[in-house]
Length: 281
Image (cartoon, rainbow, N blue to C red):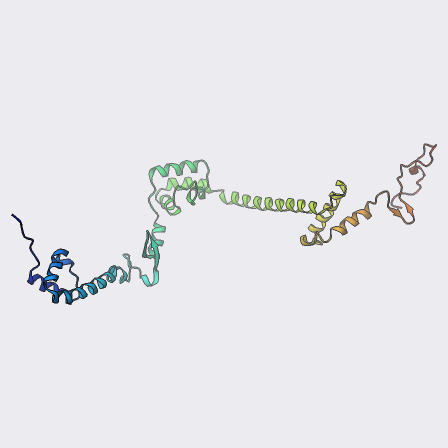
């Protein structure tokens, strides 16, 4: 025995049409699509009026989604969205958040877990800095506001933290100045090697060192700029040659000779034995 499917009644169809004309959807009527299509097929005039209304009302209903959230003017704590609100992406959705509530939550702080508290206490006993486990990174354990709340609520723990950070300012200053000194020394070393590479390699090593030393003295005195070292390299080499001439240099019309040179081929006397005036006379 076959059971016939019950169709859509005229009375319900009339109520549905009245709701459609008021701008409502058919969701509350719980009518199934096959029954509605069957009624449309049996009543073409009804279908011609109902389908455009259904499409328009569904579009309007979609635009009304989330209207109760968009129309909110204050958050749950009574802060005005016009003054404290902002729109951000959160978990894939555009949401409105209250900056005043965020500040309240930050100052209030979170709750620290027992296992995290034990790790924090061990780090403090090891004289670790607070930033080593409160800043994002490999050693992060707890947020600063959460730690501050626990310190306010537990004076014993707060005294432990105070003992750890008591000399942190002076230690930080020492590290800061040490980094500055290391940077200066590193820069000087870099300057040294750069200047050495500028000195011609055909010069003896001791001459090259003297030229580099003279350049550094002028750099420290401020009479020479780093960008002018290469262009003035020839001047420093010439000055070094005049100060310490080689055996081929001449003093006036006479070549310079060594004071240790023998005066006669068959004698044992040296030129220095005949010097009667001092160097600075």
